Amino acid sequence: MTTSLAEPFPRFVDLAGQPLDGGYIYIGTANTNPVTEANRIAVYFDAAATTLLATQPLRTSGGFIVDGSGAPANIYVPGTTDFAVAVHDAQNQPLYSIAAYPVRLLTSSLTFDTVTIGTSVVPDAAGGAF
Image 1 (tube, rainbow, N blue to C red):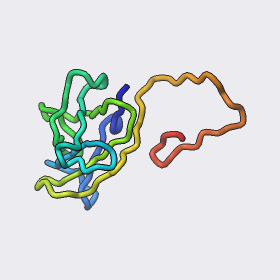
Image 2: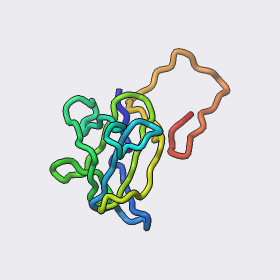
Image 3: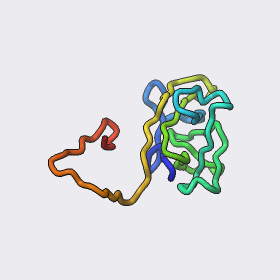
């Protein structure tokens, strides 16, 4: 199972809210500094997280993470645990970070063995449910 930052593409902005151009994105173990190489985790450009390993730091163009060809790309993180994200500007200076980016599972359907009647699902701030 993999986790994606967002779809169709994650978008990063600078401190003025403008699309981050030439920025650096680091992904690592939750609650660590992903800029430190030892804290980084493998990220991929393919949803199966098997073939297209992305080199960190990831780069941005127009606010989007781009792959080696310069095209906007999604990033996939193997596993089901939260992860840290650090966003730096074009001079590789820190802008902001997220210590534990919440997992978003990729699935086309969910199956439940038991359904409880009279219970509601409340969306969180990011649109997911808890």
